[in-house]
Picture 1 (cartoon, rainbow, N blue to C red):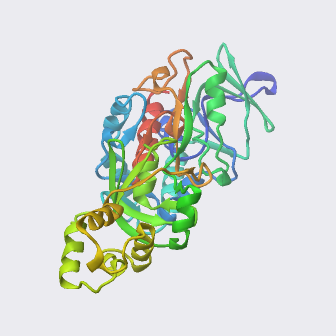
Picture 2 (picture 1 turned 180 degrees about the vertical axis):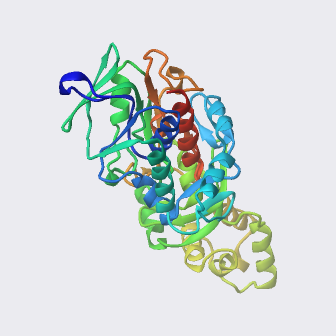
Length: 399
C-alpha cells in the first residue's frame, strides 16, 4: 500500500536477491497473500540457475538427506529439508510440465534448458503478484519501528519484513558478492568465515612441473581427505585437479591437509603388476601401468617413480611402491582456484543466530536469511539447489 503524501510504498516483505532461494521464497509468501517486492542487483533473475548444470540445471537430487550438507550445526538443515523435500520440488516441476531426467547418482536435470526452471519460478511469483525490480545494488538498510527501510538509487523502499537471499561470493562474474554477510554483521549476527567450496584444487610448483602436461586427462578415482571420501571422476587441469571427486573433497579440505587418491578403484594394482612381470617380463613399467590408466598418465607416474624401466627388473618392493603411487597417491594441494570458479561458498550466517523452522534471526524479529548466505553447504549434485528451495519455502511460509 502507498503512504499518504507520495511516501515510499510499504510491502509486507522485501527480498534481497532473485536467485533460487529468493524466487522460491517470494512465490510462496505471495501466494499466502503477502505483498512482496523482490530486488535483484543484476539485470536478470536466476543467473546462477541459468548457468548451472551445463545450462540444464541440476535442480535437485533424489537422494537428498541432511548427511549431504555441511554446517557447524549439522542438525540445523533437518527441519527445512523435511518440511519441503526433493519430491515436493519435483511435483512442482511436473506441475509446470517440465521434462527431466536422472543423469547419475540421483541428480535430476531438465531435458531442455535451465531457463525452464527460471520461468517456472517467475510464473509462481507472477501468480502471487510479486513485484521484481532489477539493477538495484547494495541498498542502505535501516531498522524502523515498522520494519525496515531500504535507501536505493531507485528511491526509498519500506518492508515490514526483510529476507536476505543474496548468496555468497562464489562466481563473481555473475555479480555474486558478500553483501549478505555485511547485512548480517550490521545487525550483530555472527558469520562463520566463508571460503570457496566445490572448487578445483591447485598443484604446488613441484607437482605442477610433473603433471601440467596431463591437462584434460580424466580417470575414475576415490579421493579422501580425513574421514571424507568420494568415488567419482577426477580431471587433470593446467593448474591442478578438478572433476566431481575433487570438487566434492574441496569442501572438506583445508590449507595444509593432504588428500589421498586412488586412481584405479576396485583394482588390485600390485597383483596386476606382479602378473605383468610374470607374463610379460620384457614389458616396461609404463606399459604395465598403461593397462590400468590412460597412457600419458601411466608414463608420467612411471617417470616420477624413477624405477627400472623393465618390469622384470622391479622387485616386489618396487612394485609395491609403484602400486601405491597409483592407489595411495598422497598430495598436499597448494590451494584452490578460489571464488572465481567455486560453485558455492562454505560458511556464512551462523545457524545459531537463526530459527531452523522459519530462518528468522533470533535477535532481530522480521529479518530472515535463506539459501547460500547461511552456513549450510550441500555436496555436488543438486543438493545446494534443494537447500535453496527448502529454506526459501520455510521463510516464505513464515514471513
